[in-house]
Image (cartoon, rainbow, N blue to C red; front, side):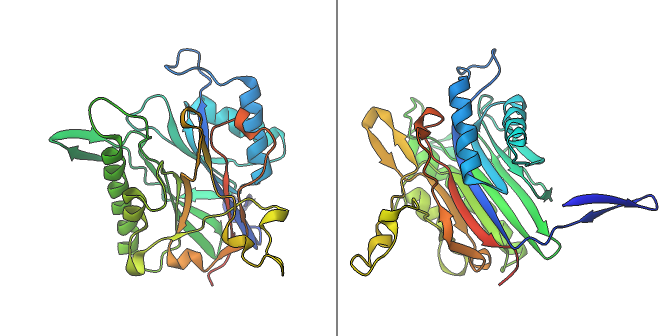
Length: 302
């Protein structure tokens, strides 16, 4: 999209997009402020984060565990210097003052509706969704737009004041409420829900979020795109067992799929499964304990 001026009036002119890519990526404590409560990201780690994003080639990028606005600006600038322009941004500042959810986009972000004050009761105690939820409408071109909900649910780290899995489930219920509110406005909505959900596909958290019936969300579940994941005559079931893990938990030496891109029925019609994947980046772990997840779409209703 570019802006032109004609007789004193400003107008938006959209490129004829055919496809676009959406990426979610937990960048693991991307903190750049020396007075922050968490350690600053090293230069080597930052460079690997930038590399991973550049390999993913997003048109729309959801980030989790981003620090202050300074951190978001740094990533945005580093990508711009390397040829990836994502000029539109949204930073959600919830009750966690250290890390946040953010969105960077090549396309205009319209109808911003941040959710930063959601709360729930657990065992008689009130809790707030730590990172909040980002909700924006992404205007891909004059004929296609979609609503994006980005989240970073409660981690699996145990806390002394409540059960972490119960907290995560309550956050998922609140996120699902916002999903249903979107469906209430338009049952055929192009809706994309993504982020670090910190739980497995068959957990209560994910079953709650995905839902049932006409409002159920489609789990894209991309895998690594490599030679060993391509069906052949001798191995026709290869694609049924793709490498799909997105996070490594060093303490338990555990690889898990915790990062998701979920779609409404309306948007699932535009999804290009063959062009959706988890990029393979050498030395990925130097940047983050997570890997980016990519989904590609046609830029028109189908």
